[in-house]
Image 1: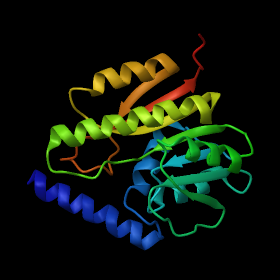
Image 2: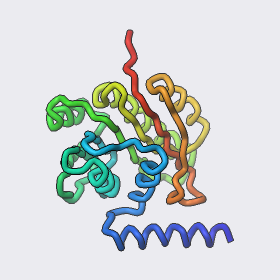
Image 3: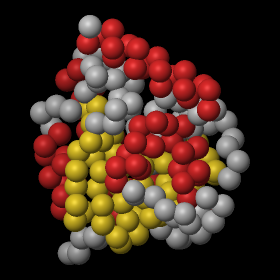
Image 4: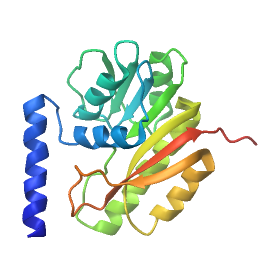
Length: 203
């Protein structure tokens, strides 16, 4: 029964995404995060890491409006979205960070989003370790890309390393919560870390 319900729910969000024109079911996860935590406001600057196929960038642009900016980065090409700048590149490379800073004209973002996922191997220990690695890279990027007082949202696969990662996030943000959006599959091990009020470490 639980699996049946989970599949029906997954199908519901997939169909709803198609109906309203979102590129991915994951768009509803960001909408649910926004509804609960109010991380984005009109006029904000947002950087979307792991942006393909563009569902989160679509939602972010709706929320920040005409005055706001959204920059999406992914290893893959992303089809254009009106009002969003996409950059094809690898976040772990210094050159990509430099390009992001060029595009944003040196202005730091109010929100850094990361819905990055590793290529799934089928071995959960490996996949979870790769997920933590991507999260570490996203957290590292806050130092260069996020304003003091800014917010960070990061998807992580729950596992033995998750607690250590959350501790690292606590060192840089004043308020940290874990959240599983209703649009996530019941069987999914993904958790979203919602970190608010960034404070840059000194020394």
